[in-house]
Image (tube, rainbow, N blue to C red):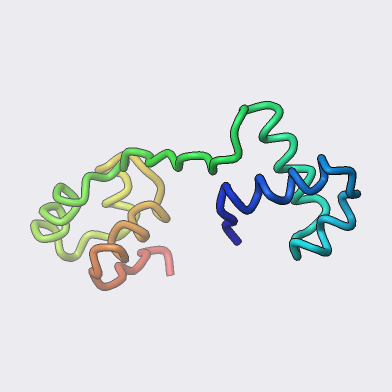
Length: 108
C-alpha cells in the first residue's frame, strides 16, 4: 500500500515525540518494520518520497515484431527469438501485449 509523504512524516513525528515504534504502528495502523524503513529512507535519502520507477527499453521493438510476424505468420517462438536475439519468454510476452495469438513450439 502506498502512503502519502504527509502521512509518513506524521508517523515519524509521533515517534520523535517520544512514543515507541509499536505505539506508532498501532495508532497509524502500519507495520513496525514499515516505520523503521521510513526512518531509514529519511536518514539515507533525505526525503520520504517514493522512488521513481525506471522504465527499461524494450529489447524487441513492437513495430518490428509486428511486421516480422506478419511476414512470417508460421514462425515458431524460437525462430522469432533467434531473429531478435532474445529469449522465448520475451517474445511470448511481447506477442501477448500485442494481443497476437500464441505461437507453438516445434519440440512438442
